[in-house]
Image (cartoon, rainbow, N blue to C red; front, side, top):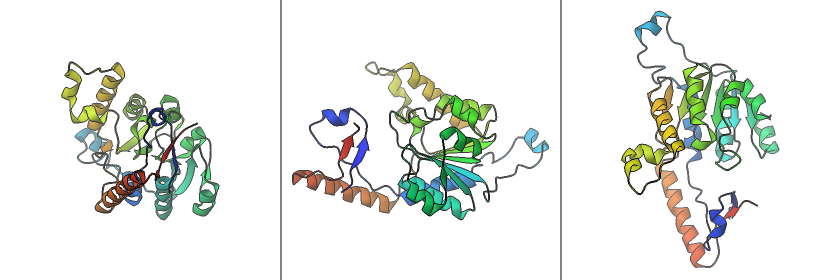
Length: 262
């Protein structure tokens, strides 16, 4: 049985247990993060303008002996670190809950967030979303990063301040970004929703929507459709876990129950 911690207050208000579905394909997700680092130039990439070509041929980023920062060292974060080591990368990490055994086994070191960001050529963001991680990467953190670093976000969107990310890309602080998630994805899917009479739209939602459109058009941003986990085996595990959760509830025992944060 897996016991998890999740902070939303709603989980404590409901009379029904909230259960986790642990079926997503961590191998595919970590590979998406690795591919984002190694092939970060889609159009950084595809046809450069004549002006840029006059400046010389664009070169990619060699990964051997580069430093990757793992922001988040849970199950998927650890798998990403393993792949990074296969590429010959050095690894530093930040997590609010440190795993000393994993650090020893995989050969990486933990440090404060700003120090980790200042060293990294590539930064992978694989933290869970929680009140303590919302906006974790904002203006100050981007300023602390090494110039021309690459950001890979294959987890949750609200850990990264989208406006700060747009500015970091626009002013050249970041070399590129690979994003499997964007804020306000439901609004992107159906933007006409904002005009429904019964729909309350906050200014922050509209700013996030505009930031998304800017990110989608940046030549040095690769966006994938929040789909890094999606394989036939992962979907089968999700269905199996869902059935196990329902059967456990019917039998009077909660399986994979999520515990509200204290």
